[in-house]
Length: 122
Image (cartoon, rainbow, N blue to C red; front, side):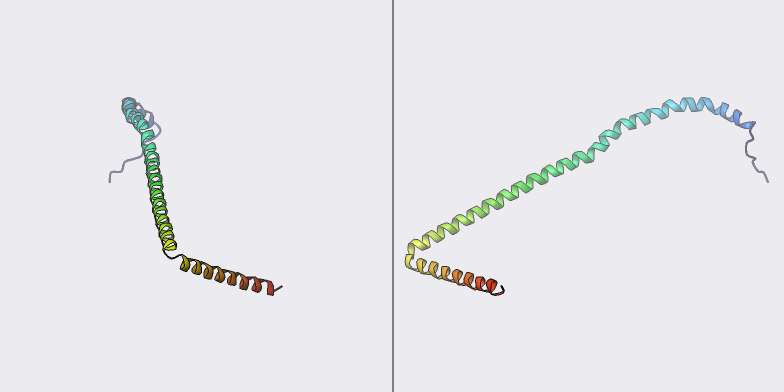
């Protein structure tokens, strides 16, 4: 059995002395990628922030556009309803007055019931 014995203290300076030149030559070679990589770290770290900002900008734009479209739709429908109501009242004035009076009576009756119910508990 051939077992390798661990280096003794006397072998350590020799090993360090023989690997020293290789370590010195490897050091500049190893430093270049490290320095090169460090220069690329900052743009790589900024990429998610830029992408997130662009995404938020697009989301905000799309939301504003959707809200504007909804507003225009509601505005258009309310104008159509107003025009249809005006047209109906012009065509049927007596019926319109009777319907308005009936609606007013119903609302007044409901308010009267609610007022009595709320005041009855006191």
